[in-house]
Image 1 (cartoon, rainbow, N blue to C red):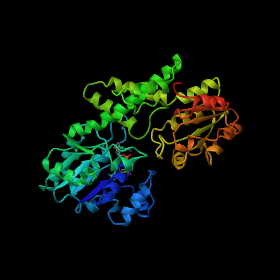
Image 2 (image 1 turned 180 degrees about the vertical axis):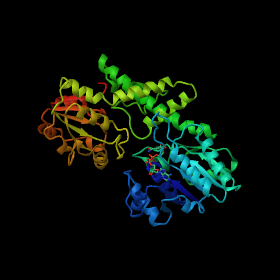
Image 3 (image 1 turned 30 degrees about the vertical axis):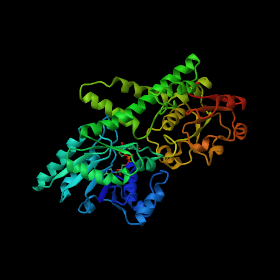
Image 4 (image 1 turned 90 degrees about the vertical axis):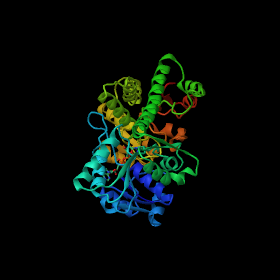
Length: 437
Ligand code: NAD
């Protein structure tokens, strides 16, 4: 089976490489020429554990190829996956211009029955619009070629994307014809050997499942952050509360970790988009509005703790930040809490030294010389008035605290991920602040 995957970002490149690994012939297409040139030279534009080897191996063995135009490979493929970005528009709704552009190219150029699968996260009703766009293009050409649209939302997590794609909890496939169902079943068959579930649904439900899943996860995070903030006020310990409620089988122990707010390319934009979809249907998603509001505030919590500690005066204070990526094992800084904290610290007149094992280049691209870039995690804490931990990289889990304490001007550690032990930090002589305890 031959497929094309349009958009070689986190989702497209991982999907393409994983399908190729299963023996499918894949062409990954991106309009960003630089990206494609760099991929052909063996340079992977994003950081994702295991992706380099998978891409290089499959490229070398001829199952994975790259192109800048979908037209160049359409004649040879049966299924086109659209994995282009769907960033938030100014009003929070999903910007579908890239999705529609792929649909137009598809309609303008297919010569035989083909399937267009949307893997991007798109609002309910998008497949219907995609179908109309394709049909309009076919009508303009005056040709009668049958095609199908399919919704196959992606649930991979950055940082464990390959594992998630290769052995997912489930695959959701929204179809409207038996023919499309058969083709998709065939394509996913190699993965089925691992015994995971494929759930076929109608298309609107598949589109909604993705938003509902991300919104549910974001809700758990904001709920726990709210509980954590209240714990601080009433003298409870959110770590103990988390264990206490997580053992209730109805609740489960996943996604109950309080922290310094969720970021990334998905939760923030998908929550906003679902709120917008509801508004467009004269409905108000009140829970999600609160989820968003709590998250915006939570991103400021570490700054507020620092501000309070220094009695509102951070001018000329030197602050170290460990972790810039929105979460560990990725270089992605989209909607990262670090960006909010950096802005607030700069506004307050502080000097900032940052360190992240992978996202330094991405930070330079976004923040430039507004901050200082340390050579390693220890270099970052030299003479600082506080250390803020923002990303839970493994590297930061067991630092040499004795050495760090001697390097810091003020032994103040503010932990946005609750990865250190409060009692131990106090025994080591640090002022230690965390979330909800
Ligand atoms: P991304 O921004 O990393 O990549 C998108 C790519 O599409 C870019 O390389 C861009 O150049 C390319 N592109 C845009 N228009 C194009 C066109 N007309 N033709 C060819 N290429 C084009 O995006 P991403 O993070 O991979 O996300 C893609 C979609 O998948 C989004 O809808 C996102 O919500 C969803 N999603 C993302 C994740 C994730 O963890 N990143 C997980 C699940 C779903």
